[in-house]
Length: 213
Image (tube, rainbow, N blue to C red; front, top):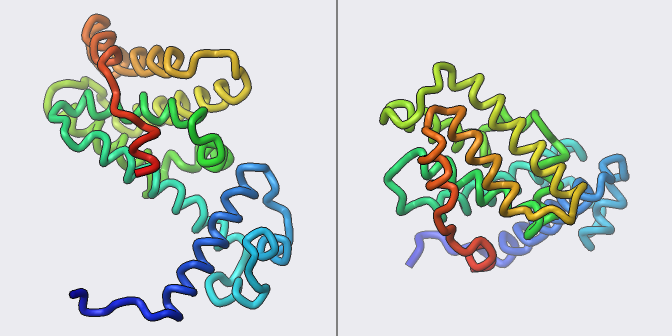
């Protein structure tokens, strides 16, 4: 048995905080970041006083909402790449799965895209994992990137630009577009054209099943 099971009050507070975070994520996704705290609590269906039990400002809530979205996406990527030994494939699979997220989970995608290049330096979500995978691939001799920071600038720009394109151009095939960008990134990072194409043609785990598990 766990040493400390959450009390009813603790569970209620956790539900309230989660409701506020979800409401904030929906507002960010809709581009409605200038609404009042009252409107946020109404969207979350919680009392006005409940807001200040968890957050001091609206900006603090928005930061928590973005970090929650990033952590959820990062945890999903970790789960879906856990059995891979090649860091180049880990990087490619994470990028390919992220590209497919924009259509399958548009609200989460819009939360991430709203904060744009600020997330390239984030300690949450895709950025630290991409940096980790690039550095691991360099150490393993799979990538030849001389400057990880510059490589991350290119990867972040490609990921964000791809997401915006897929939202703006719904007729485009998201899987095909994502795999093409991933292939180009692998070539930039040092793989041959043939190997980059082969890696980006490998089957992917079921993103929808994993996200709802």
